[in-house]
Length: 330
Image (tube, rainbow, N blue to C red; front, top):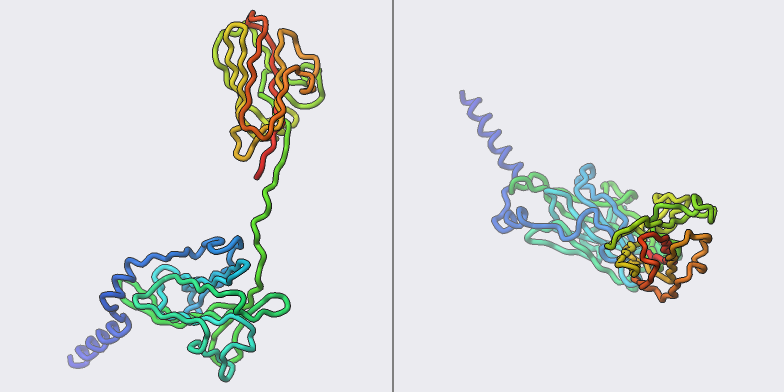
């Protein structure tokens, strides 16, 4: 009986020693703290996607990430913990390997030039380091040793306390500390690209079908049309009269009132503007697909809308072609 009681007491002590209770302040922080930088953040501080290196806690557990990026002025090193992991201390070295504080091949985190302690605990922190303070090699590269003291917190209790390191290169000493190499990158925003295309209002006849051209394009024939408002799509780059080969550049609105026809062309695609528009309107079937011969033309300076006030016989039967020269900037 005494042996059974002794075993029960011993087991109770083990359980209570492995689950370290947090102080009230840290426990509240552990439950409510939100990481300010996601572990999958892209270009938080620069135009470059950050390099992501796993933080290994106790050598074998992935507990977070180190995200590294740079702009023309600074190096940004972000520690970001995974769910239920928190940082109590951070120690960071950046520069040539020869300058890493080392004893017997083992790094000395307490002597790293960049360090931070936290109470309450946190899940994310970014060191911003001026590039002017970093010694780079001829290829603008450096080494990064990122150490952390981490706690795994579940239901308000610390279930593990571990050392964290990030990197794929092991220090030569007997412990498992690691580091990695990073080369500065130039990730300036590329200049916008502008592409220009021919655009036509979608219609019920193709140029090929009308035998006026072997190129793509549409004409619309109105047969005994009633007064009213008619809306159409304006497609750019739709080779072979296949709208899937191009894109929807805008819309065309046609308002018919007796012999009056008002044509309004609007660019609706983001970044799209008009440099020219042409409209063919006649009782007669078109004999050419050349926009310059349509009889109605506007030269525009990157407009997003244009309109024509035209007339025809008013008998309800006429042909129309709407063309636009469009340029789209991405």
